[in-house]
Length: 392
Ligand SMILES: [Ca+2]
Ligand SMILES: [Ca+2]
Ligand SMILES: [Ca+2]
Image (cartoon, rainbow, N blue to C red; front, side, top):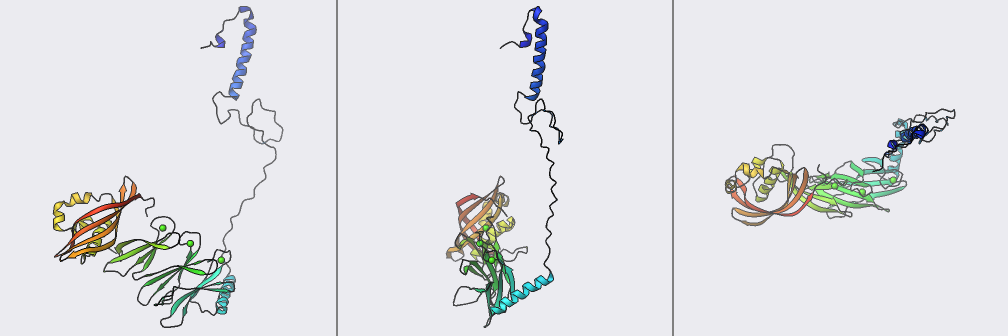
């Protein structure tokens, strides 16, 4: 290790001169050390530059900071946020009259009309519904774009119900399937009590029918997977308190059948768990699990199954279960008071804070007892498992 320069012994005759020299070096080193720290630092340790003075200041002994300009900072006028102002009544009147005259020129007596951007160009179009003559009358849709009239045409079928058989004005205009194009969504109802849903999209030449649905137990839109696109849930005719639902998901070109499940037709509680058929008993078992009504689910087991495991032991197996859906339910064998029922079960579990979805192929042996159909014993084979990133 080299010795410190301050500990070097020197001849006495040169002490005074050298001491002065060393003192000068020491002070210089201190000044330099204060300007250029040996450890790298992002912030200079020099005193901050004097704020704006228009007198040229003496050049600082050490100043890593650039000299501040003497140009006075221009004052920025405060930005006034525009306040949206409602249109004047006269402007609304003019718009409405323009719409009415458009419809009259197109020979339409509309039930309702809205100004919307239905085709992606900057201008607004007039979108509306009217009722055609006939028995029963048919709900028809139209778009008036400048002088052009475009009809929203439902699919041709033997049982032509149009967009509905009642006057209705339930419309949505938005990017339903998150593909960047705007859809026109029209709801209608049939005399038989079914709900109709028709989805149109501008394809550059016309408003093409993207999809049409009929749900005897209603139709709902939901976004269960969080991908911004809505799934279409078609409910079939309710079976008592139960309803069978089919979920259609946009696959880039079509709404494709992706899943089906049993659900409650009414949301009110308490739910009665039907057990009049093997299929209903199986659906009731899984719906009771989703309801977190574990005692009711346990009661759907046969006495033999219940005697094999106590309620406490059995219930522990569902400690992490968040939701269970059962679909693709079918009776594969039936003989007397016994039946085999196959199904697919989609279960969501909370595994250490992560939501894990598992699809199982299940098969249950069902037995008919005095109180109804019961689950005797079954098997479950996991088919697919993934982590759910979005959990509504
Ligand atoms: Ca437009
Ligand atoms: Ca779209
Ligand atoms: Ca979705």
